[in-house]
Image 1: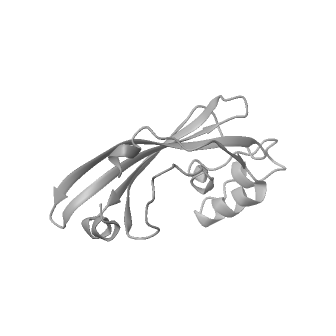
Image 2: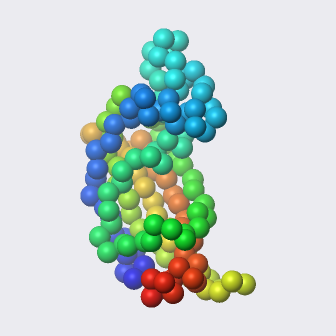
Length: 144
């Protein structure tokens, strides 16, 4: 199921970097830096580096992961430029790889997903790589 998903992409979804959401996010991660929340001191606020976690990246057809039981393995962000409060961006995801390893607690699957955010002209703003670990118990439940 997962190997057949390699190379599949979701459709682009429009997201807005909303001021209120950025303020709440900055406070929730314990980093209410003025560059994120003070619209008086800074003429153009930016979002925290991990803010894209809240965006909608669309659905990748055929990739049906369970809502619980997965392990967050790794996550990296790369920025071409800051993400500005108030701008609209297009986000999508792509399955980059899937592989399996045997460990002490059984066979595990490693799903590598790359996510992208572009401006409305199609210029890349950021990319994110994440690895989702699918344990043997979850795999058995899914019958993979």
